[in-house]
Image 1 (tube, rainbow, N blue to C red):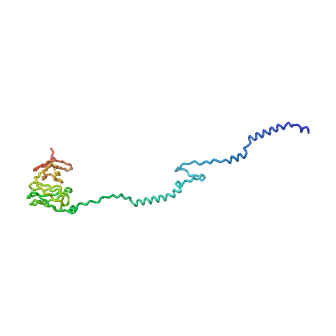
Image 2 (tube, rainbow, N blue to C red; image 1 turned 90 degrees about the horizontal axis):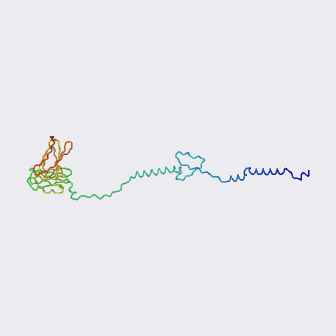
Image 3 (cartoon, one colour; image 1 turned 45 degrees about the vertical axis):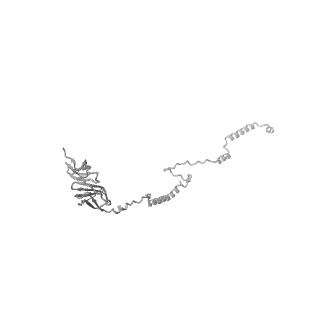
Length: 278
């Protein structure tokens, strides 16, 4: 027995080799130690930020578990809803103030009205005027016609060649004197009643005869450059006019105008309108 213990054992070397191989394989394939796993768990984790979602009228509300995004006071819906009534009240108050105080147009300074001369103020009321012919003894009539309103005032000649017009409203008048022996005198644009009528001189008149053939209801008017008013008639007539060129305008029942240019001379003159069918 003693001899066996002293010599080398033949099975020890293979056992040692198998143990070393087992340790090597165990080191290679054994799980990582707990210290490394714990160290790895200590590493900071990346926190994923929620993606920005563009506001949309039909976007669903956020879940309670999601993080709440704080808005500035100007974009907070609760604050905007609270301030909306105050803004609407201020707007309504401002609109009411503007409506109660309408905008006034800028003042326009106008010069004071110019008063007419004192002489014209004293003669605004109708007055009486007197006129005189240079030649006395004529018999006839006097006609004063307002140049704007065509209002006329008539009187007769006195034997001494004077005449008088009463209650004449202020204005400019043409005064025509026509005698029975077919003489005429005209004083144009007399300012009555404040200005006196200048002395008037008679001259031979033009006896204008208007004839209308083939028409029974025509009306005409005679326009003379010495008179501010037209001389009117219908059908036919004879008129005493100052000598000179004049126009005779005839209007038919349909309103159509027919004109004749006449040189009225002292004595007899004619204006003929012939509508007879040949």
